[in-house]
Length: 158
Image 1 (cartoon, one colour):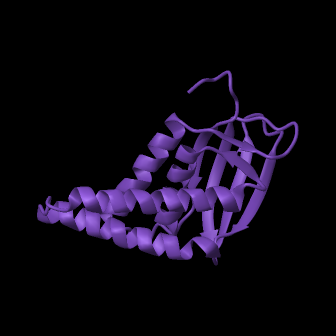
Image 2: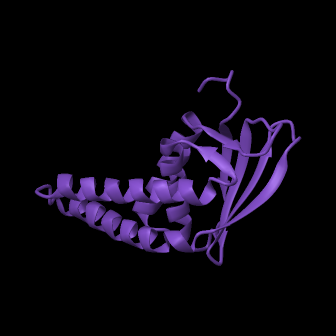
């Protein structure tokens, strides 16, 4: 991470009901996405005179993505609410693809894993592209950052 560029996410936190049991593969995907996101990302708000690095808290309530964003010097703090109804179908299809992929791995069915993974990756890319589109009025994020954020959104949504 280049610290000359301040347009990045430094810290990310997910708000969810910890009493709800999360399937193992979703928990793994969540942790991997957080790790990868913190290590490499490009993120900025579309508001003038606003620099990161950013701290983000993510929550989903009633099909609304809530992003509480602040920067390190606390000169910026804002709660963004973004409807995500348009992502619902993609999240469900992605969940099915993930289930198929991880079940195939568990069962040792390696015959079709490459094809299943390619399909899962394509759905993931589609979700990332949709996320960029629905957040473009608020944020600037690159494709890899959007992929990781889509994974986090998916892990909260399911």
